[in-house]
Length: 213
Length: 213
Image 1 (spheres, chains in turn green, brown):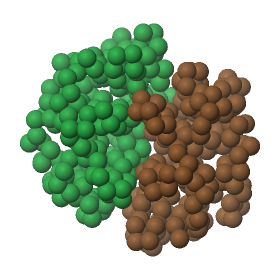
Image 2 (tube, helix red, strand yellow; image 1 turned 60 degrees about the horizontal axis):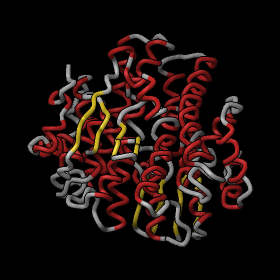
Image 3 (tube, rainbow over the protein chains, first blue to last red; image 1 turned 180 degrees about the horizontal axis):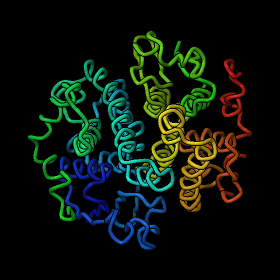
């Protein structure tokens, strides 16, 4: 059975959990606690599997794969029951761009190791850390809201769930966790409330994971 | 004719230039100077095209696409003459993961807007900025070097150029520009010297662009 090594609060693992649920792929979730024991992602056994010290990692038999978006595309190619991309080449490219706007421009700046570096190495204050966090989310969401005005329906791209939604929902979770004012983003909020009705998204929520503390 | 809006020193634009060259796609490069005029990526006309205020943007007729990796995949799907991914599903996934290790974990932390925020908002010193820059490259390259021990041949994945090489070469360019000690990365260095022999890579180098100053 497929195993996903992840962590309840990891946005990247959260994206993959949604994909596994949408595609109804039988899987086991293995917790790699990013805080406990100085961070289990740094343990010898995990680093052997993933030398980047990051979650998630997918293990499918003897095949071992890192990077959430590579994992989701692998699941897409091996389980085509529920498509996460439009078929049209241009539309597919636009969905990828929306996903990268989230996964390459917002998320990398606000993940745990970056916040730890800012606090430990640059000794920034809690207020500065919050401002940093908010800055990248607000900048990213402001651009995204403009793009969604052209692409969105019920979801980020028309009325079908795509990879863009799998990236957006975890990013909104993080924004809310850090009390970002979401009132300027009506389309993002609409998509969130549409996704929040779907069991695949609900089951994948951080608070619904076994390792949530 | 396809137009690529970019900047000579943008790693993301550099990736796309290599793809356009490898695939021999006729194109026009349009300079968006990221420093001049307070940053031309913030001009009204550019933001209308790309509300993220980032380069590159591809314009193909009336189709407008941002995000370098989405653009490269679009070129891949519309110009299959030179394949940038292996055909095998697992190998393709591994190539994507290598590309994302660079494009999602290293590059976003060291691009211009982040360095500007660190200097302007957090008032870090030049030495702290250099340490930040080196930290993410060394951490990322250290993990990548271990992965390449399993995947590389002449290039990142065996003996064919893939998207991973298109992400790696611009990242090495940046590492050298900021005087990162590259001696710990023999496989990365080998791949660099192999790519440096190819006209598609040479023509795409920042210093060979019309807007290089």
